[in-house]
Image 1 (cartoon, protein in one colour):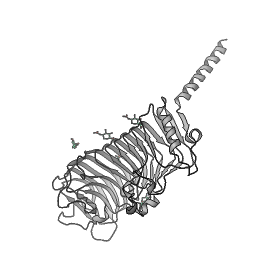
Image 2: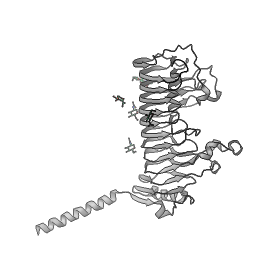
Image 3: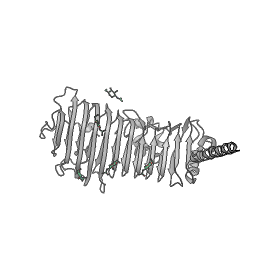
Image 4: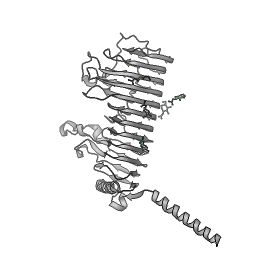
Length: 412
Ligand SMILES: *[C@@H]1O[C@H](CO)[C@@H](O)[C@H](O)[C@H]1NC(C)=O
Ligand SMILES: *[C@@H]1O[C@H](CO)[C@@H](O)[C@H](O)[C@H]1NC(C)=O
Ligand SMILES: *[C@@H]1O[C@H](CO)[C@@H](O)[C@H](O)[C@H]1NC(C)=O
Ligand SMILES: *[C@@H]1O[C@H](CO)[C@@H](O)[C@H](O)[C@H]1NC(C)=O
Ligand SMILES: *[C@@H]1O[C@H](CO)[C@@H](O)[C@H](O)[C@H]1NC(C)=O
């Protein structure tokens, strides 16, 4: 009798645990099974996806939306919160945008808007099919170039995890993070051709708490760019290239910009890019500041301009170079930056005469110039940096009076 009771008790507990376990699992909504999505590259995924979102977002319990393996066509999707409970979006398929730029009236393809507690994960790909857009054919005539779509927009989101998915061949920026709090990218991938214009990998603006970890970015513009009003950013284990490296800025172009503060970039490999690590501000600019920015352990391989602070950033001659930047740079460090450069301007720390840089540290800078266009340049203007460790080329050895041949036209 006692044994029997024990068995019954044991079975009941197992059953109870089983029920609890099932309840802990998210409910899964499959867009194909439940909402008639078709992986035929013809049927628009937009309605099935947004119907699934409506159900998931309205649910009082955590829900997962599944986009299964296969290739889908998606015209566009504006995914909006707030939701009643956390939502997960599992993307296993390849989602393709219409290739023709004129299909887009606004610069957005997939937008996530005002959502809290969202996790996007899976082996899926957001494919912007940018090839036609890169050619810029009929651009002026049809006037679509000003609203080429960003692949994925993250607008005003809180507590977000983006894991494993990829962005491919966006027509414009791959990812734009705006007004977000606590968003993490992990094992994310960006891929676009070297010559694709304006295809920044991840652009961050006006956000607080952004982590980008273990991410591989190949693209035609900045791998990661950080705009004004952004603070508390941690970037680690990035492989970037081709592309234009990792940039803070450009800052100071617009009135009412907010400061940039507390940005850390560590353990990155930057291969075959135009610029490596860079902070750029416009001359002739509005006041702003960028503080507590730290680059550590960066390998640059065959980079044109590996390390720069450029407070005379003025592409397309859109400013008056005779005036000085009003953006104050303070507490900036570059530590253990090493590798090779393909242009003589190896290190350029060009600060503003109006607002000289404060507390800049250069520690263990070892970058070999591998070309033959004269001696390597390591220039420090309007700054008294704290120098330590190995310095190759010799730190600040190029006189400020020497205005090197910076091909600013190349560097936009
Ligand atoms: C940040 O978001 C993650 C989800 O990505 C969450 O687990 C974590 O608790 C959040 N942190 C804070 C401080 O809210
Ligand atoms: C700087 O940002 C990191 C990463 O978000 C954060 O962990 C740290 O607490 C911040 N430091 C300060 C002084 O706010
Ligand atoms: C970066 O370039 C170096 C030298 O050219 C090469 O050895 C390395 O494999 C490259 N890394 C990546 C991740 O492409
Ligand atoms: C940078 O690399 C050095 C040497 O490998 C290591 O000791 C240090 O912890 C690294 N820095 C960070 C912030 O990971
Ligand atoms: C610069 O760093 C110092 C020392 O770490 C700190 O006290 C100061 O607040 C920082 N300045 C700014 C503008 O954050």
